[in-house]
Amino acid sequence: MATSICLGKSACIKTNSNTSIIENIIKYMLIFSPLVIGLSIGAIYGNKWGEDKYKNLKKPMYNPPSYVFGIVWPILYLAIGIIYSYALYDYSDTTIYYKDLMYWVIPMLALLFNFLYIPVFFGENGLFNGFIIIIFSLVFAILTLIQFYFQNNYNSYIKYYAILALLPYIAWLSFATYLSYDLYMLNIK
Image: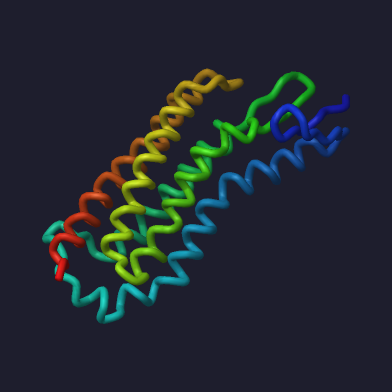
C-alpha cells in the first residue's frame, strides 16, 4: 500500500515499503536533535565554567554545583525531543505528516533561546543578557506547553504527555531564571 510522508499538508513524498524507515529516521532526528545540540553547546563552553570570570562571581547559596547541570539538561533535552516528535507529528490511514510550519515556530523559538543562553552568558555583559535570554526561554517554553495542550493531535493524550515532559523543563527554567537574576544582582558593579 502506498503511503505519503508530508511536511504540513503540501510537501509530500509518496513511498511504498520503506515508509517506516523514513518515518523512524525523521522521528529519531527530532527526538535526539535537542540533546545533541545542547550537549554540543555544553562541550564547546564547558571549560568556561572553570575560568576566573565565572569562578570569581558572587553566587547565591542555592547555586547548584556544576555537575548538576550536566545531569539535568540531558534528561530535559531528551524529554523535549520526545514530546516535540509526537506533538509536531500527525497521520491518517495513508499519510504521515508533520504539522504545518506555524506549529513549529513557538517550540523552535523556545529551543533557540534555550540554546543561546550559555553562549550569551559567557559573552560580553553576559549576566544581564543571559538573564534576558532565560526569560525569553521560559516564556516560550510556557507558550509551547500551551500550544501542545490545545492543538489537535492524532493522539488525544499528547496534551498530557506534553505536561509530563514540559512541566519539569518549565520548573527548571523558572529556577534558572531566578538563579540568573540573583547572579546578575549580586555581581552588579
